[in-house]
Length: 186
Image (cartoon, rainbow, N blue to C red; front, top):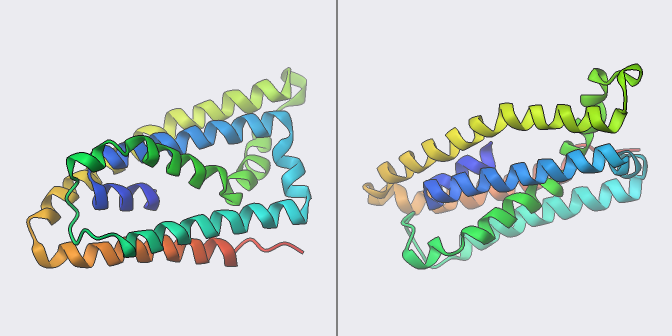
């Protein structure tokens, strides 16, 4: 949610909404991986889990540094930036796919609701994952929309605009550092 809010405040409603769609495309990847058992393999391998965790952390830190280095001092989304919505979608997707906490969610939380006596386990995982998307996607889209509204308000305040760029970059870097430092495995 924080990624979507930050993206929409920094780049407008469209960026926030597209980020939410990218994040949920990443959830679809996790659903498929869980249904195929790939998530269990990654979680069981300390090396694979660590590589995924640090790749995700590095990616978030990269986004933060890139935010600091942009030339724009405002939140204004220029016409040329609107064509980058595809890139924003893929950044949301990558952000979620590289999130080891998402893998652990599908391994720790969803299995509690799986009943092997009621049919194919993979089908149950897919069904529950899709229910999760149906519940969370409207919430995340609302965050993207409301962040865009906040962005419009912030555009009218010059002093806040420069500060917002640094807050956005700091949030991404902070999320990256938190990802790198949490969830360590023995």
